[in-house]
Every structure is written in structure tokens, then in C-alpha cells.
Length: 193
Image (cartoon, rainbow, N blue to C red; front, side):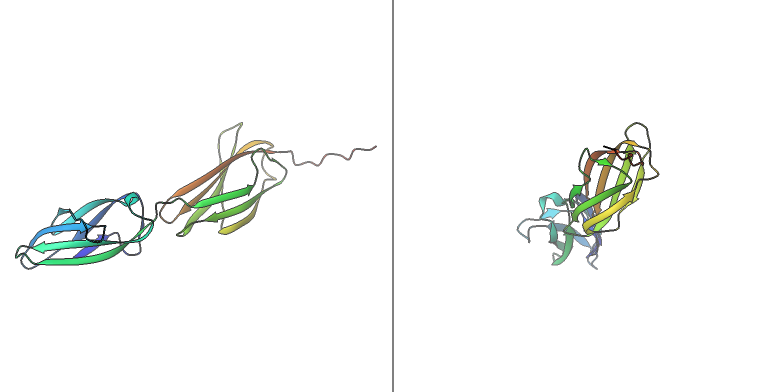
């Protein structure tokens, strides 16, 4: 018995199609799968080459085992077990700045925390002017505690949509959105009293 997908290195989520192969000199009569330690078994589609749709939302996040029961045409039953790495939970993100409605000049400070029970694959900031179309994307390389700054000196003053997206290795995504105002890049003249 071979489980071709997912591999031991894969991190899976949602409904996935398990795929494998079974062989025996006597031929394969049936292949069954269990994801509750052998308390119940469901028949897979196929025999020598088989598939099974597994809804990982029914299982706990983390490492989970599956048990395969294969019976050959002579009535001999064999068991095979393997592990699945399941991650259905989106990464966490908490941003203290920018605050919604912030008024900013020159630099956009990004402060907060991103975390996941697996690996953060991508963290990006997308800025879009509310008065026109288009957007710019900024990759953030920091993980964990975030203290970054984006230079906005070349941007036009006005209101902007700020979207932070963090994606984990299983492609789960968390998003935080804010609106801020970019003020003109000119200091006001001093007020003389």
C-alpha cells in the first residue's frame, strides 16, 4: 500500500482527495480507510489505484493518523497507517497601527503581531487610493512581532484603503482592513503669536 497524496511533508486543509495504490500477487478485493483509529471504516473508490475524499474540517488541526485496511482476493487483510498534517485554522493577526482613520504623513507605521500553529508563508500590505483605481503591494518579511514602516513620500495625499493579509503554508488567509488619510508632505508653517 502506498499513499501518493498527501505526502508526509504536505500540510492540508478543507476537503482533500487522498490518492494511493495497492498491490498483491492475489489481486486486491477491497480497500477501506479509517480516520478514527479503526473504530469505523469507509470503502475507498478503486482497488489497485484508489481515491478517497476526506473533509479535514471533521478532524483536529495538527497531526492526525489514518488507517488503511486492504484485503486481497485470497482473504488476507493487511493494515497500513500514515500521518496527515492538518491546518484549517487561519493565521492570527493583531495590528495596533495603523489605526482605522489615522492621519499619516510620510511613513506608514505597521505594528502588531502575526502568528500561526504552522508556518507563515506570506505577509503583505496592499494600499489602494479610495479616489482612484489601482493598488500597490508591499511584502513584509518580519514574522511574529511586527514593527515595520512603509515610505509614502511618493504617494498622493488622500484617503487610502489599507489591507494586511497573512497566509500560512496551508493557504489559510487572515485579513485586516483599515482606512487612513495621507496628509500632504509639507510641514505647516509655524504659528507666530
